[in-house]
Each structure stands twice: as structure tokens, then as C-alpha cells.
Image (cartoon, rainbow, N blue to C red):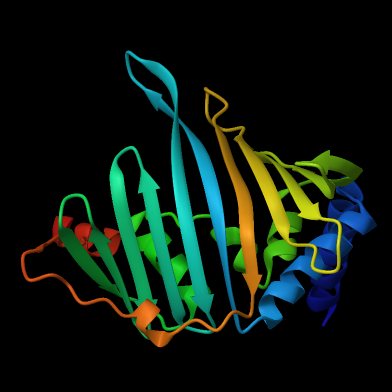
Length: 249
């Protein structure tokens, strides 16, 4: 009994010191929670996000890659993303327990069996295949909690002008990343823009996304989330990290 009590007291002391070490702005947390709650209650939504990502290329230096994404989601298990970039066009479809990729430029496709729930599917594909999804963090129910867990300081910077409109500005600073987020100053508090600096990278890499054309609870047809592979397409075999490690052993 004494050991349990001492352990509990040690945990409470650690928790108190951890909370003291953090600087969390109450208004910033309320805005983050409000955004997560609203997106979580939607049955469907669509938006456009334009992303810019820094990449370090040996013997060339720092370069920036731009991508344009059209995103459609119907909870809990339907998703379609259309991506365009300098490298070409890519389509992603998720319905049920299957995620399908089709490269329109090279006429190649691949598929992965995933969990049915969209956030779980995104997590699984990211962990097992290192595949990133545009602005995926914003659509997790625990978005605010995750930000609090990984950042020591979260600050509300007030209202700023963004593309001629008032926007809430929030900054989250942690050991690994510095995150800036702008939300619309209206009933829906939708994300408008984000900038992430990777503090671990020697080049201080930056990742940015700009949202537009939000549509809430649109009536999206089921056919949007179905895709028939062209007969002329060739299959890409998707090799997971787990299968790679098991083959090495």
C-alpha cells in the first residue's frame, strides 16, 4: 500500500511540474478544441489545400516543392484526394478497408488494406509506408491534446489580417517543431493556413499549407470514392516496413 501511495505522489509531483513548465494560453486551447469539435461533428466536407514543402538535395541545397490537393471526405470511412504537382498527378481513394493509389502520369496503381476509420487508416499508412496526407493532423479528434503533449508553449497571438479577412493566430513551440496556425474569425473557426518549422533538421525545414474552398456537409456521391483501375495500368507493389523487417530477419 505504501509503495502505491509513494508512486502516486511521485506521479502527481511530476504532473504538477510538467504543467508548470508548460505555458498554455487558455484562448488558444479553446480555439483548437472548437475547430476539432466542429470538424468531428461534420458528416462530410471538402476543401482545397496548397502545400509547400522544403527539401534538402545534396550538392544543390534547399529547394521547395509545391503541391495542390483537392480533398473530399465522408465519415467515417470514405476519402478521395486528387494531387497535382511538378511530378504529375496522383489520385487516392479510400472506402471501407482499402486504400488505392493511382498515378495518372505514369499509369501505375497500388493498394493497401487498412483500418476502416479514416484517421486510423491515415495513421497506419503513415507508420507502415511513410506516406503523408495533406493537412491530416487537423482531422484527428485529439488534435489539441496532441499539440499540448508535444509543445511546451502554446500562445494566442490575436487577430491578424489574412487575405483581407480577420484570422486568429496561434503559435505552438516545442523541442522538435514550431507550429503556426491561422483560423477563420467566424462561427466555424476553420483552419486557413499553417506553417511548421522542423527544429530537428540542420536546414530548419519549413512546411506550409493554405486552405480554401471549404464546403461543409456537401452531398458527395458514392461514385466519387470508387475507382476502377484502367486495364492498361501496371501495378506497384506496396512494401510495408513490417514486411521489410520480417524479410531481413
